[in-house]
Image 1 (cartoon, rainbow, N blue to C red):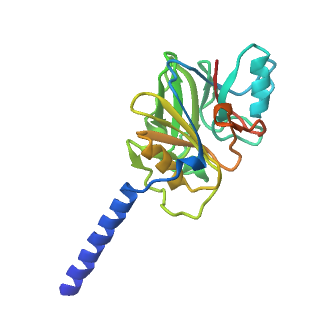
Image 2: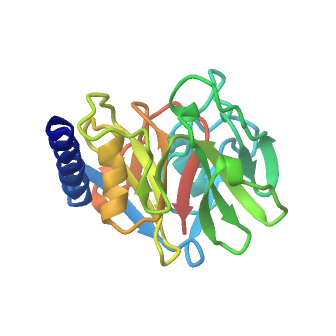
Length: 241
């Protein structure tokens, strides 16, 4: 009996210490490219193909196309996973039109299917949200949407399958929603694990955050002297003026 009580006590203490260290765990923000914006004041959209039907693919191609229409690219990063032909993996809505259907498969392989996954979407009034795929309902007010996975933060808590100290390291990018309604984008400058990416969003006050993609990730943010114009991906998230 005494042995059982000792083991139980050690377990409780260990869990308490683990919870405390996780709660107070932070990451060095200098190791990330970070962009915060208000989608109801700025122009935030998702892009995939140019007016001629050619996939942008790279941030440089998008920048060139926008400039030809007298638009200035303020910020851009790859906006989710894609198939071999660079078509969106999972739900994609552009200008209110569904380009790719929602993927509700819960038993697929890879990061996309690490449940729960989610959807980043922007309503026609400029409000941005991140919704778990299982809770998502399509409606006519959605202007843009991209599906990816896993969720990083769910109602302020870490995704249950993320592991602190994991050796699964890659360049990673994601998006989070702040209590103010502002959107926070972040990409690591070096290889990190999911837990550290989630922590970046958590320590900045995000309630929900979604992983976008991994080693292919690129970001264009000249105000932070971070200019990556290459890449070969599908949907791109961008702010313009």
